[in-house]
Image 1 (cartoon, rainbow, N blue to C red):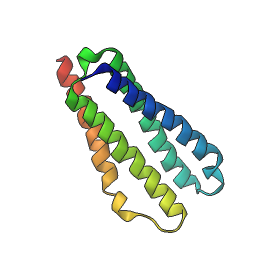
Image 2: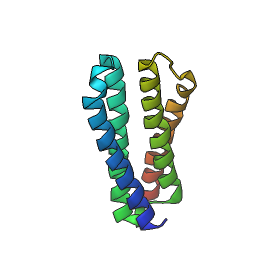
Image 3: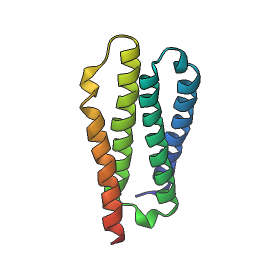
Image 4: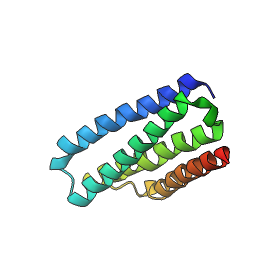
Length: 122
């Protein structure tokens, strides 16, 4: 896997998590319930955690495989971004329920990414 792709992906997800976190803390704080804001923050937190992992893997690219990269990348998109969509659509009164089943698929991809990382080291 090309090092610059991994680092760029991690940096992009990290940057977006800072932007989304600030957006949640300032603009959304006024329109979201406490539970909705908490859910939004979970999406931001998991996005940042995995962005950092992608960066670390990018700087040590002998430890990353395409499968690990794609599990983390798709996992972030499906997990965090589905949470953002669920929370924001719920706040507008038009909850996008089809996103509900997508969140655990993203979470499963994140878990599989970690599992593949463990196997890679063993």
